[in-house]
Amino acid sequence: MGVCIVGWAHSPFGRLDGQDIEALIQGVSKGALVDADITGAEIDGVWLGNFNAGMIPDGFCSSMAFGADPALRWKPATRLENACASGAAALYGACDAIDAGRAKFALVIGAEKMTGISGTEVTRALGNASYFKEESSQGMTFPGIFGKLAGAYFERYGDHSATLAMIAAKNHANGVHNPYAQMRKDLGFEFCNTVSERNPMVAAPLRKTDCSLVSDGAAALILADEREAKRFRRAIRLNARVQVNDLLPMSQRDTLSFEGPRRAWQQALKTAGRKVHDLSFVEVHDCFTIAELLAYEAMGLAAPGQGASLLEQGIVMRDGALPVNVSGGLKAKGHPVGATGVSMHVLSAMQLAGEAGDMQLDNPKLAGVFNMGGAAVANYVSILERVA
Image (tube, rainbow, N blue to C red; front, side, top):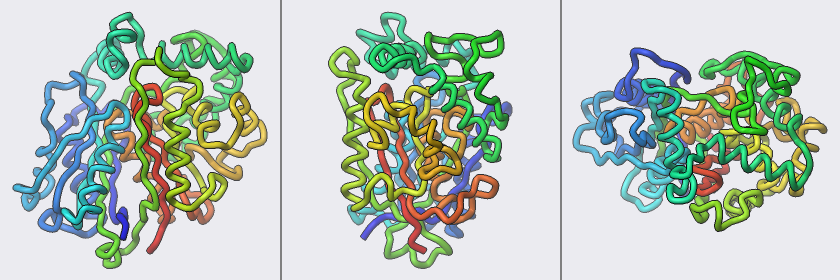
């Protein structure tokens, strides 16, 4: 048997003044329990994805969820951290417990509070998710790391500044329809493709519009053993879930190959018995626009260096054959690090359940989710399908 998503909740993403990490965790926990019509007494464990890395003083947050329902007290609760894939790590940890027979129902939360410190401090905290000895200790930040990736891509395949701008413009246009998104504004291709005072170069060749947003936010899921899922009003099954980790030092691998994501996609699709073109839509980890472009190629949608064709042909657009980041992605939705992986699964489940509101696609059947930690270091790919 498998694991199903049977309930969910999602906070707005953005600068959430007045809400600390505890309020974020408890808000979505309550919402998910209500959505699934289940009480804390039936939950067998809590899994929290939270990166932190010094962005807040609270380094031990897993039991904060207990404030959502007094009946959660005494349940096992664990915080998981795997950089920007901390949310997927929490989800997969809960799935493992259900698969092992140690749990029937699980509460999975992803949460992050990032705006309480300066942008410089956020950049430093995130940068320490790289290989410290060779990267962050040498002054490299993640914008710098992905700027280096984009520069290498341009050197190998030609200048793709306009391609990255097309990705940014697509995701901002999609984000207009997402009520949880931090930025609900269609910026347009020309703005995204032009360096200006409002769109400065951040880490050449990446402009501000090529970079995801610093955000507060949280999302939560209720998971159930598939045998138990029949009692719920809808259920979204995880047909496959694969984690592939690569070497941490960028100096020891060809980062443009995106080999970790490629292997994760291949294994997940094989496990699900599907091909990439069987998917109805995909949510991918566009922490920077170059990451989405490389993800297209890692999925097998295009040969290396040919990802731009998917945009030019409209394949990955909202009305295309395989829409990518209908939610607006991290680019428009925001990227509260620990929440991102859970958010991606919540929004995919909403699509499959026909409950995505203005974001809703026409009768989607199968979803792919790719959540990534570091520069293609921790790679998580899920294949989701509605079963009830």
